[in-house]
Amino acid sequence: MIPYQENWTTVKKRKVLPQSRFPIAIGTGHKGNTQSNTMRIFLTGATGFIGSHIAGYLVTKGHRVVATRRINSKFANCDVFFDSVEWVNTDDASWIEKLVTFKPEIIIHTAWDGVGAGNRDNAEVQQTNIDFMQLLLAIAKKCDVKKFISFGSQAEYGIFAGDATESYPLNPVDNYGKVKLDVLNLFQHFCIHNNIEWYWLRIFSILGTNENPTWLLPQVIKKLRAGEEIELTKGEQRYDYLFVSDFLERLNLVIENETNTSGIYNICSGRGIEIKELIEAVACQLKVSTHLLKFGAIPYRANQNMNIVGCPDKFEMTFGKVALESLETSIGKILEDSD
Image (cartoon, rainbow, N blue to C red):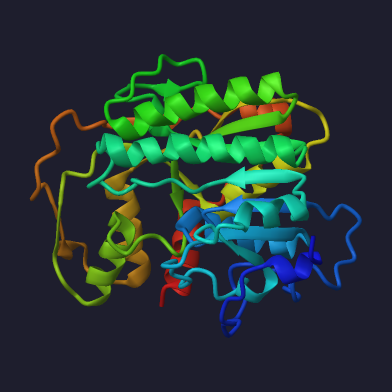
């Protein structure tokens, strides 16, 4: 086997931008770390919204991170940490061999094909996520991985009212949610059988920079800054919003947890916020007229879920409680970074 450092796919270096999102200075790769709890972590989905924030956060914690990429990957979200992460190209036939050489202690799996509305009910696209999880589990066994963290979704609950606990009946309404459950079943049984510590973290709504520009909040910010009117529903939907820094603190509790408390956990605030309140708070901080917000101009979708709020009690009893940022503070950070 050739030396580890020569195994990785060479990627064009990018300029490192100011580290406003990650408060601790980022070094080069794993060198210069003075922390005693440095871990080897394999991360999938590092170029995406949530994955990019996780990658940057892990680097600030001094961990040695290997992340997946593809030939056609876009690195717009990765400027801050690009040179501090070691990348492996999954289009390269030897990528698994390279990963086995790295021998990760923890796997964090965020990658998921078919998240966009156009593919959420595409069975063929969603099936690829089962295939990829099977591959990751085989890698985990071969590398003797100690801990495997994967992400679920509020979509597993389907249409519901009230605050969902982890024992709430599961009734997904699209293939995205159904395949999440299929992957969970595969993941849980494999890890238990192979004595791998496992965590299925059900995400609700995460707010932060690097969101897909077609999503609601980036569209609202873009239009309000341009002084354009925005057609919206009445905005009575009550959702569980968690700012990305609060999410990362919760994830870190799972990473650093030294007791095997494997299981399914909601990653949520337990705080329901109406979309109308969220959007009006953006308009207020931008100091633009709320007359631009045309609430009620668009009807609700059929079977619109009006209340998607999770219960964080199980997580907090297991790992501890993490203080929540105020909505105003969170929006202020998003606006500052997206200016």
